[in-house]
Length: 104
Image (cartoon, rainbow, N blue to C red; front, side, top):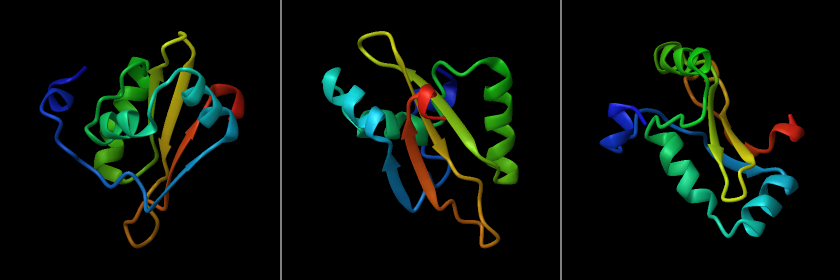
């Protein structure tokens, strides 16, 4: 977890709309975990399981408005991804999507 995430500081708009694939919803239910836990971490710039290259891209995204990816482990060890769309021409991220890697 990075220093920003430790302070739980929201650094960007995650998206106007939050959507999830059926697989992501089922995995959250099966693991007895809540989407909002991961959304809060994502919004606080806690990229968790992202590799170093994706973390660097996320840091750049806070400046240029490109897409932001976070990766989290669920209780069963599987992973869930959260992707905030790139900003549109008005500087708004339209959606945050929760999905499993197999949904991509």
